[in-house]
Length: 616
Image: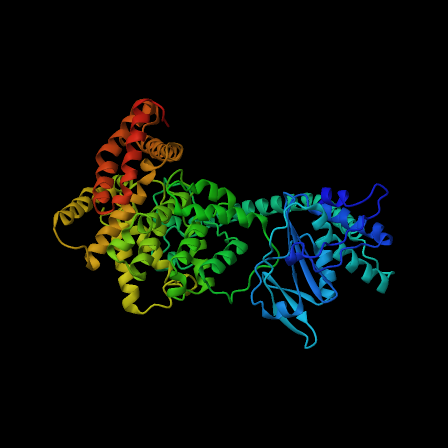
């Protein structure tokens, strides 16, 4: 339009008069197109502004002259579409089909003064004399690229409108370009102030972060001193589990002396992230949302959205959340399934439970809060994307039990396995008669914890519902004992051989046990980079136990001697895949064909081991 406008001006900058020919394009000509030369300067200002904004996007203009409304659309390619409407035509038209161009704010403002009012995606016009607003259709017939016609149906009416307001109040003026430049300058000034303030705040934010880190370190050291004092003061203290866990933290007395001291630290979840999760999944909107905005919360939400994929990396989430991947994974998935809403779990109690749950995971190389969050992720993946939930028609009780079992399945794990406890005659081994020692301990610790109402996420349930969910959780967590692996797998294979539909609680719990077992050892089925990091972690924990066994004068357990890493690590991984992982995932894939891809990934990782591409 900028080009067309310049051709409509004479060499001295004045407007060339143009008179419409009678009958010419009857749908767009009922306007006196002759322009008084005295308005040339105004026309020049208006067309200059139009040319600036008409370069990159279509422009829509509407003006009122002598009771006739003219709407004109100029496309980016220079084509002109125009149509006139008299009062009678406006009254008969029903629906608007065209939106205002965002850039034409000044013209829009002038049109509103003239009685034109935007409404939704269309435009409403006030029609005298009754003053009612009526919608009208602004679909426009093409006028081609006729410069003279564009001048007539767009520029002249605009100039008349411009001049009429200029004559009414010359002091106000209508220099659109000046107004726009003024606003741009104001925005630039504001942006500079914001940048200056941010620069001043940056050192303060850094100091605040360091202060939080120092405070957390001091808290850990203080708690460590408290634990040591307790040992000195009460070496014969009661080992009643209800009392030991009543404060919501794991307790050193139930572990072997060789376990590293764990000082549980409670960390809260990101309030902005939790508010967005509740808003997205229909959570309790009565919970106050934090003021302002936290830019980091957007990144955390993007990572949580990847929980729907097999490739989700829990390490990235841990880094983004300040070491609380389990809290955020559980909070997101429980809301996504609608379980918090269904069971009416109190928000404060849920947060308390998730905080102490994450705090109760030791800083082991492998059995830590990252592993717990990863198992929750894979359990959810098998339920949803893998098709288990739909295949077994699992209800809310079943889904809640499966996800809670995944979250707690290694709670308070000391980093030394069942065999070590049995060989050293630990308190836990004696308590549970050498049967699924740690698995029983994880369950006892959690169900002792929820005796405290502060952490009881089952608070709103009837006894029957709670008993149903608890029984499923117990069966699932006990099934993660690798000493029971063949027993659980063979039970599943026998059930698969039966020619009858999967239904009932017994079938559901068997499949749920298979699911948590798959999630627990799914590292071997993950993409190479992810598998490699988990393999390094389990090797580090194994070698810590091997070092401890050597110090005690015990024979070092298989694959736990760090001096034999180069030979035993690849051999141990291949053996575990061949005899444990592959048979389990192949059996599961017969019931859940969508999980067959995991077996293929195991095969690729095995090939990499054989090629010596993966090592500890």
